[in-house]
Image 1 (cartoon, rainbow, N blue to C red):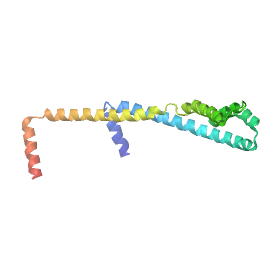
Image 2 (image 1 turned 60 degrees about the vertical axis):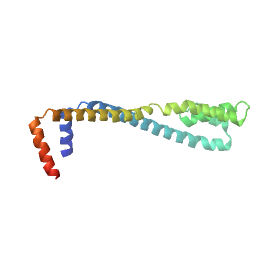
Image 3 (image 1 turned 90 degrees about the vertical axis):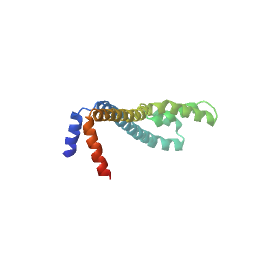
Image 4 (image 1 turned 90 degrees about the horizontal axis):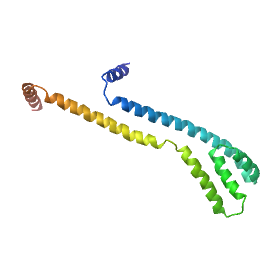
Length: 164
């Protein structure tokens, strides 16, 4: 309970830069959680589709696989569908690889959506914290500069005697 009281007192003192820091942290955390949920769901869908499609691919049932993957929203399904669609026309293996890479180029940006914000927020929150520290130091030195010179001399002589 002591930690909560300390945090409460800290927030009641209202340091100016704690609020932007909390906002940036909340945004970054929300994006990280959302991406985790989406990527976990995508991984699960990919595994289901791949478990269904792999035995058919090994047996050479390409028409059945294309029927399944054409209606699938899973990333693996779309990539396999690009390759199988390309196989309908005669061509080289490189053509099939290129078609599947096109599918990857369509899917990967959807999976990486908003992840670059997390790195940006991490950099920004560090700089906001540093700015708050600098402003705190300025306030501290200003408070020391406003002390009566006689009191400064007493403090200086006391600190010298302690050091010896």
